[in-house]
Image (tube, rainbow, N blue to C red; front, side, top):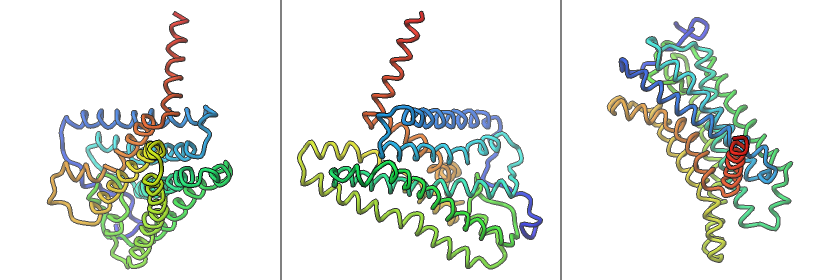
Length: 315
């Protein structure tokens, strides 16, 4: 298995022999995936169907929920198959497809959160110009740019990986990750390493500028404005800040775990760190935004109440 022309599969070496407990872990993982799909899909439908939610903030939320479905679908079906499998192998094409899905999910997530922070900055700091600057066309363009930018950027990354000569096929991970594959190369990886650093800057550092700028200006308004303005700003910005911090911590865990030797850590902790940003973010966002955003909460209650009343009338 000297290179990709003969390499047909990878072996995932992080799975433990848990015996009959595999069925318990399978059920737990399947329930979590079902909850992620149900919560995100229901909020997407609610936003799309109700005209009262056809505002920039909710359109960005819809893009965020679609990305949660995209990222979790890139992991969970694969993870469920591997949990029940006795031989933890994955074909090379499927492995690279999973790498593409997982890492574009991360880039889209962070870029989407950056755009959402800019949207809140305009709404709070420039309310008179908000409707003009965040017209429906501008909102659609920003969403398209976020997705296309992230997808194209990682297509380049994958193409650089495909040209490498690999001298092994064992990945010490639960799913396919980019850097562990690059570490298997016995050819020159200098270009990959340079573009990898460049990709981290594009994916994390560049979106960080609008985030820092937006929340710095919002905080100034909060401290200088009335109590009512502070409460409104906090209520609309808190979910985004929590989501941003949670995803940032999860991304840091994933990068550190994939780049450094973590075999000295307990196995359960290593598994938790490697899956954190792909499991927690997709379940946290719909719950948090569904509870915190009053418009979404009210529409959700109205839908549930209408269904209950409809059933009672039929009875």
